[in-house]
Length: 123
Image (cartoon, rainbow, N blue to C red):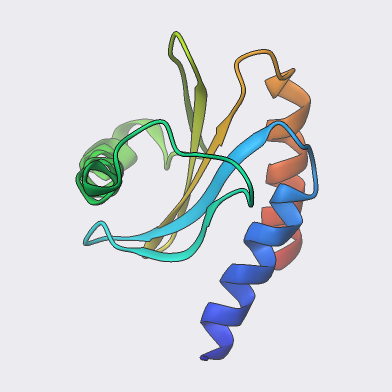
């Protein structure tokens, strides 16, 4: 296991430790491959297994496309969406993307602040 992979797994574990309402923490490559993390143990994914890779690719593409506006707006710190059944946050990490999903009733502002603190501590 590479030291980067080990660092990514530790990052995922640290974020899972912030709240039991976090469902998924994953590091996704630019090509849409999950390279670390995954669903919380004992929790079932909402999407079918075969849809996960398509979903990761969508996250990666959206992240790459948002970089087109970095010169005008500055780089993305994080993006957040609320869906009917889940909340999703994305945090660009150079060549990767940190994706976090959480239960809808989680107070997400504090959780995002805590994730940003963890990310700032490793940079």
